[in-house]
Amino acid sequence: MSDDAIRLVTIGRMLRRRGRLLTVLVVLGALTGFGASLVFPPRFTTSASVLLPGAWEERVLLTQAEIATSTVVTDRTAAELRWAGVDGEELRERVRAEVTNGNIIKISGTAESPAKARRLADELARQFVAFSARIVDDTADPTAAAGPDQLRQMVLTTSRRITELADSADPGRTVESVQTRTELAKLRTALQEAVGKLDQAGSTAAGSRLVVMGPAAEPSGEAPPTRVQLIAAGAVLFFLLAVVGHLTAARANRRPRSEREIAAALGSGLLGGVDVAVRRGALRPEGGGARQRLRRLLGVDTPWNAPAPPTAGDEASLGIRYRRVCGRIRELVPGARRLLLVVADDDPVALRAAERLAEEAGGDPLLRVTEVSAEAPLVPDRGEESGVLVVLGAGSRTGAELAGVAEACADAGHDVVGIVLADAVRTRPARPARSAGPPREAAAPALALGDGARGGAR
Image 1 (cartoon, rainbow, N blue to C red):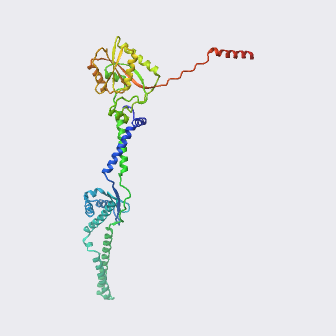
Image 2: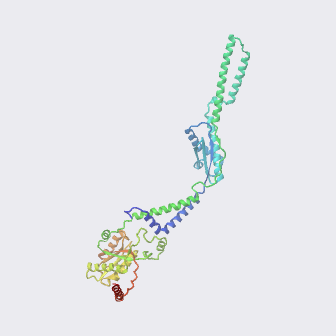
Image 3: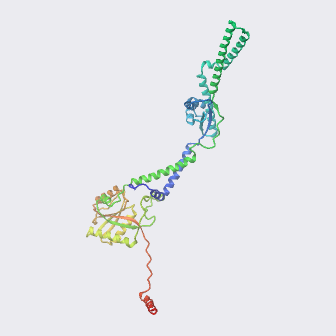
């Protein structure tokens, strides 16, 4: 697993063998999301639109959007709403302004209820329009600030004066008449300038007037993240964390699997390997503690990334491998009367292999099985034993655990004389015996009859 790429078959094996654990984690993640939805109450969001008439540059529109959510506007909105425990700083986190097409600024407000959200958006839009109008009034030209009424009064006075002069003017070509016409021309020019200023002031006042395009609509649903979204996000997050954690742990697994690595960790040679016929559920370690029962209930008491047991021969072929290993033991330690078989207590395959080895040896030599803890191994002191045989399942122990077993054997005065690897296999069902055919003597007359018939035909 540490050297292979992660494939879909690996994910499928993990989902199949860790289904109960993943289901529990998904439910736990959903409950966590539900708890988060209780801590963070539902929020509702609605928007109000403000129209900026006239031609506006894009940077000016962005500036207006920033003004809509500025501290001054939110403080005035908070003072007008008078919500308990809510000030301008908190309102600034609940509101948002963005520029849309058509010189429209969309102002959004978020609150705990639809009515509050609607009121917040409407009040913020109103305060924004009022503050923007005040800015325009404060920065206007003092001449134009005199107001359009004065300009209109000047226009009326000038028109009246022109009319009076035109009535009193001499239609002749005297010097006085020429001066009168010149003065009238100057007055007309002043009138035109006054009318131009009046139009300019009117257009400026109209262009600076922001318009709220109706009240905000009442929100029909919660703003994200909703309670359903939080529950789903918690379930998915826990599921992904569980999958990533399993894959990371599998890739970080450095348990020795090759014969050379195992022999180097125990400081001895490999005598051979034996197969143990197992059925489904037989690889689960025995034990009745609460922790072990919980692990069995969640399905985490066996490795999920271990390959499925291959199919081997029948029981007779398995016994041949055991007898061969016993023969190697007799050749390795000639004249040995007693050997100690050391097996980890959480390795059921190795334990069954050790028991069958002791049975197949038939007392020559006498093999005594001893179970030790993998975490803190303790081997009995040496008595009449001539050495220790370590029986273990392939890939079941880490390098540190194997070194601990070797140190425990040395501390008890034993020499590790050999290693036996045990693999779990599935045996093939025995073939039914073939039914005996008819005896050859019974078939002879038919053959003779055939020959006779053949001869008669000739």
